[in-house]
Amino acid sequence: MFQQNQDIFKVLLGSVSEGVIIVDEKQIIVEANEAANTMFGYAEGELIKQSLNVLIPQNYHAGHGKHFDGFMKKKERRQMGQGRDIFGAHKDGSTFPVEAGLNPFSIYGKNYVMALVIDVSIRKAQEQKIQELNSELEEKVKARTKELGETITELKQENKKRLEAEEDAKEALKKEKELNELKTKFLSMVSHEFKTPLSGILTSTMLLSKYKLTEQQEKRDKHIKTISNKVHYLNNILNDFLSVEKLEKGKVLYKPTMFKLSKVVNEVVYNANMLLKDGQRINYPEDIDNISLYQDEKIVELALSNLVHNAIKYSSENTVIDISISQNKNITQFKVKDNGIGIPKKDQKNIFNRYFRAENALLTQGTGIGLNIVKDHLENLKGRIYFESEPEKETIFTIEIPNRAEQ
Image (cartoon, rainbow, N blue to C red; front, side, top):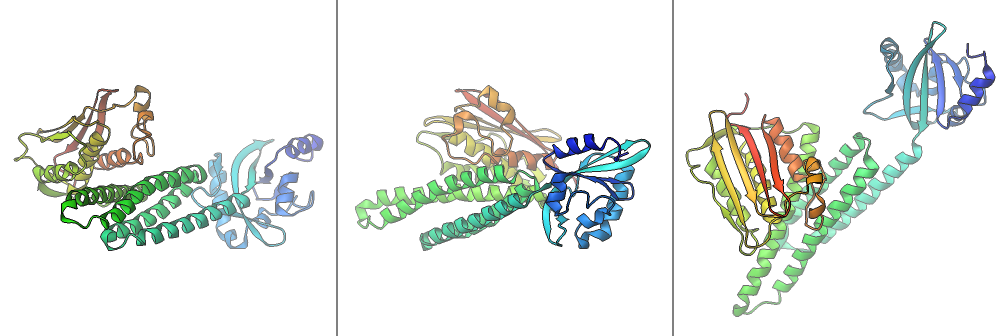
């Protein structure tokens, strides 16, 4: 059939920029276009009637036949090598990375598979170059962090975790085949979010050494508070990155225990008080002394902290953050209400998406991953999170979580 209307086939296949390989049920090549010949190093017509194995590296031959037979049974269009890198074999024996789409079809009672092949060597080289540049950047960040000295030893330890989390995050982005776009966005965000607090810590550390007199204690306290707040902020970012990596790889192991809810609330409010703006205050929830949960205590604290910290961050001075908690037979409900900037209507549908930030929050520090992490954790624990928001007035976030974790 492929020898009939040869001129039409040549025109059609020759106009395709990707490599086109057509094989029959026995994996014998019946047609290859000019792009495929050039890609694999063969002359025109040289591939015809050869086994498909000539285009596959030797170490993949053993398993390829089984994959091919399985594909012919299902006869569904799909990408070849989903979730892993695949390679082609050049005529001279060298190998190179490729992407291939498989398309089955039948003509005159015979079955064929058309493979569209793309050489991705240049893209892989660019990805490697990006990784090398990222490594250089990480080394510079590590060196600068070291200069901060003993006063921020804890920060250096957390920074090392950040680097590891960042590297794992990049690997996850690569697997999702959104490497270039997401990696650029990720690095830009991390660079900005760390540069600002690190600069603040360095400046405050330098100024502290100048205030040596007793009467200058107020100024010293001011800069110590700045350092403490910046380190706390960086610690939250690092914990977020680690949570993203664990959630993506399914490495989160929840450890439910029985605990008093007041213990978690006290911890959250204590830490939040250090972040309050002038005139801000938190209304402590009423009647919670007798409320207990059999859940992962750290996840409950993480979720509540995220909502309270956001309420503080996106509200102005002299405002109130209300925390209310109720419990029925099956569910414990948390509500955190602020009097802040609210969420624009058009952005509300995306607020739980990773890296997304509402247009009225772009000038405020943040990574856009906190709510996404909270949502994933709660869903894993059979809970949920939702909100109501009125722009320029208030936002109310609600968490609902089972009183007892599933065994």
